Amino acid sequence: MNGFKKFLLQGNLVQLAVAVVIGAVFSNLITAFTEGFITPLLGIFGGVPKFGDLYFTINGSRFLYGAFIDALIAFLITATVLYFLIVLPMTRLLERFVKAEEATTRPCPQCLSEIDMRATRCAHCTSEVVPEKV
Image 1 (tube, rainbow, N blue to C red):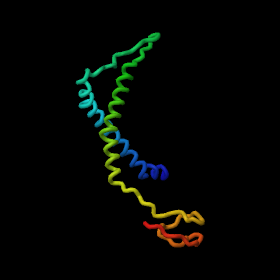
Image 2: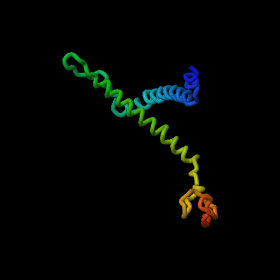
Image 3: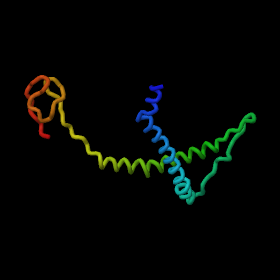
Image 4: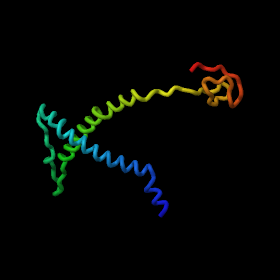
């Protein structure tokens, strides 16, 4: 029982649960934005098509391909909105704040172990090396 309790109280599990809940709420937000603003905006240019009633029947089985088309269109619109309004701006914002880490080590020319850029002697093989400017 202690192992199960430890598993439930792990930080990763709690973080995952929070991420799933936030993801579900965020999904509702994006869906509402898409249905409330983007779909009507697209409807200006030619109406909002409804494919939900389209189906075909084989041996009494009804295949609702129209519902699939509606779901596919909703997915594509939602993915496009999500990419251009959330992912792309966030990526650009993070690129501004993340500074490229400068290399502080280099390989020793004799033994190929990692040494500091400013080193004049390798700590592993003790060979003399020329320091590089940082």
